[in-house]
Image (cartoon, rainbow, N blue to C red; front, side, top):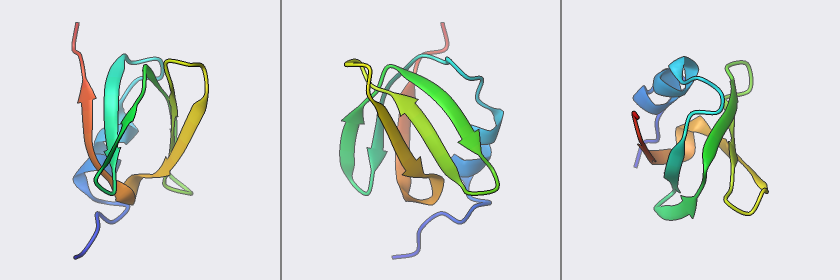
Length: 73
């Protein structure tokens, strides 16, 4: 199954997302990961960083992210 490229919709979305945006979870290769906020996206490496509710950082290749659950409020 082909994954998102660096120009895929999730990568493009992350490039527009503001740091500290509130998130609930991300899905990486089918596995849900609880997160509390978006930290940053590096377009050169395609790596996105997220803060977990416990204060840890999750770093994921944007091409491996299947979904992002976030709030707009």
